[in-house]
Image (tube, rainbow, N blue to C red; front, top):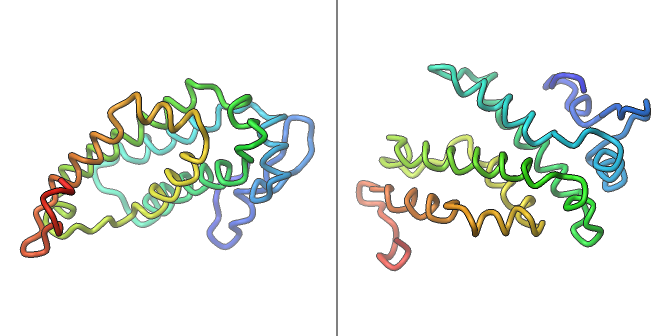
Length: 175
């Protein structure tokens, strides 16, 4: 797969399968072919790329854009993988989903201690992650793992950490 180029976003989603066929994973047919014919370790490979970027002491705009794009790629696959056909469940190993979920729990815990989040409630850079959750949780395995793990507990802790200088959460019930 080619690296992401902001002037040519289609290149990221134009994937060449092991059999030489080129598919656009932004379509249901392309995603189905990707899941059926490729090595479906894409979640752990994307998580490794994201962790490598986040090891940097300070992220620049390109790093933040790449993190968003990696999450967006996962979102596209999850969105276009028809939950009714169970191709996602059949072709994406549980260990891959577990790896993705563990990464997201780590991210939520990291954000829980973010001064920006605590002070302002700004979720800068989280749009792609939240979108990714929405599409991944359309599939049974990620949902089951989220309930079995401490994903929702980590989200609750993140909400509790928000102080908000006069802009606190509307109700103690939420926390």
